[in-house]
Length: 363
Image 1 (cartoon, rainbow, N blue to C red):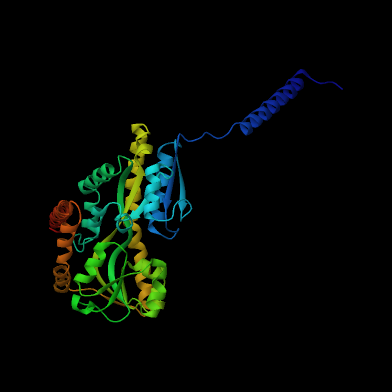
Image 2 (spheres, one colour):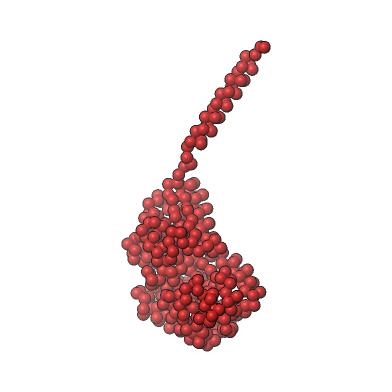
């Protein structure tokens, strides 16, 4: 049987290509994937239905893609690495955790001045709060926290976790402060929310969050200061919580920290990616509660809940009754006057800018 030269060449060429392909496959299997230059461990003591998780997903995607894989972000949702605010913040300081989110109440025992974010009615609406939390106020807080932690803990951004705190109760519609008189209102252990409840004539009752449902059922407490997504997430209407007054006394700030050494170890171009990533995270947490609250308010009403929006005159009464809280903060928290004045001035500046923008847009 004759084999032409061309057929022989084709056969040899095919064998060579097959051998080369085999070698390439073997080589590819034996070489591990390129490792990231930096690995960041991010913790949120929440769950995957929370705004914190929404923010972290955006952050992870942004940072990993914009760094071309040089930064890898591992998410730990829950209490795998640390169990509470104090423990987790200390973990960020010692470097066993790189990124963590806390509420102002969760960090108030370590940085009492952070309670300035819980001062009632200083931030009147979302537009004002979002403007203030993207400006110099946050940079001043960053400096203070770095100084108090020997440059270990860096505040990266302040977002939102749950919308606004409103007064909710099991007894009656609250239209003005006098309607709160005598009610036992659940608070966290931090001083400022307890001072607010007392200023409005109610009785502050610190109760751990996991015990709140049964506390409503048994009458240990008759009200709380929560956002609507938390109220519906915990099914509080089933425990008797039927009345919510949308007084919006506190923006539910979420403070995002990073280990400062881990941040500064990165080259400038990657630090820029991380900073931009936190901006993207912040925007995601600003938006998430707005969307989730639509379904939550609808579910609350379907469960028999009653919503009440105070009139401007009624809102002014709440603000007037809360005035002693401002005095308490300035007199009892180190540098309290400085932080109160700064937040108030930044809020007023933002409101003026918004009013000017509205005037231009409406004319």
